[in-house]
Length: 305
Ligand code: ADP
Ligand code: MG
Image (cartoon, rainbow, N blue to C red):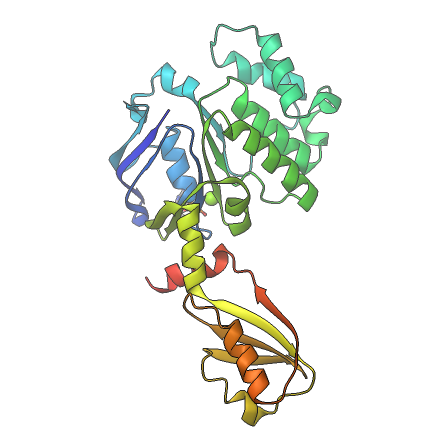
């Protein structure tokens, strides 16, 4: 099941939330939709799932326009909306039964519920009221709701926001498992989420797509974006000496004997740091390359706009 977004623009009154957005997601891809708050992620997802219409442009899911509101499209898509709206007064099983009844899949509703409760780890909680569950379990109910009809496309809007680190890992694992057999698009404002789950990234800012690439391409940009080397010497290099580090973009002292040397470009500056130390009678006690993440790439991409 593919998703094709063609020149989608969305206005809320005077405000433009999406500006001529186009991209394609192929069957089986797990795509991270990344951008700061207000970028237009939720708006795009609501349009893809047919909850709101675009002002102009088209979205096709497996070749069918979502604005057709056909039953086939509804069955094909599972959607976890932002903030996971649930009915707190309903019991978990009752709610999932209600969700399953919305889709006529031809399968036994009881079996569907049993299956999804098992996959999402809700067995212990299935007889509880949704309102009494922890945030992590509520998010599982949200995922169960999105997955209950075994859709081929899964749209997840900020699925891990507000969860604690353990819950995040659990939900990510669930998403990763679902991604093995489904086309997944997940929005996030957290770079690490993309690194953990996705194989492709679409970055959006102020309603405009600013990058659309394979995760590896993003990583090669990371290398070009910035390098930070943490270097500890056996004694304190004086300010005059630091000025001699001309091969670096900038140098910051973070402790008496420890500097962060920053540079741009792909060339590894560690050999130059060693040479600098040798030439100035300093001994290098440790040299660490700080791993960069998508945050830096994102900063570079959005600043260049
Ligand atoms: P994101 O999910 O990336 O945080 P949204 O799609 O929620 O971004 O919002 C994009 C822009 O559209 C924001 O500026 C937001 O304030 C605005 N917006 C979103 N929903 C509405 C709405 N229902 N009415 C008016 N403006 C909205
Ligand atoms: Mg949002």
